[in-house]
Length: 146
Image 1: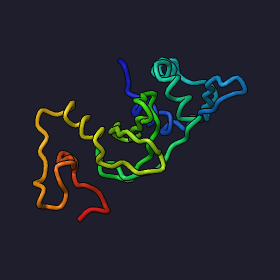
Image 2: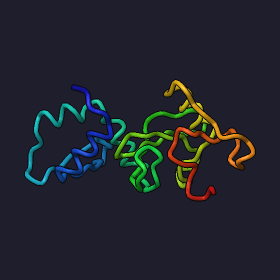
Image 3: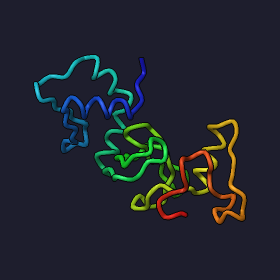
Image 4: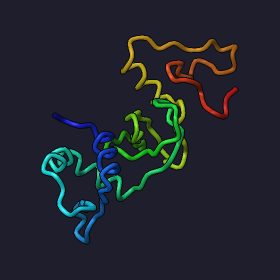
């Protein structure tokens, strides 16, 4: 059974496992009780590069449009031009950002992703002040919008 990176991160956090990089940039996992279960190690293997990237780049806490909570976002290995993809550690919702210090927003790339992942994407009419650039499949445009 293949687990998503979000599921693996949640399980590692719930079991108190600490991730680190050694001097040669090799991923190290330390559990509170010593050795880790072979099942957990198997689930971590496909995500080793992504876990290293998380340790190198760090994570940030933002509001997630996917699960509707303040959650931790981590970088994914996906890059397009100057944009990097980031994902919610709770639900796996992804967004693209040029600057990770900026919170998720409804950029063109986010809307392109919505088109790709849903059969119907509805937009608010231009006269609402939101304009057609805002994806109506998310719960709301964001805290800075009316």
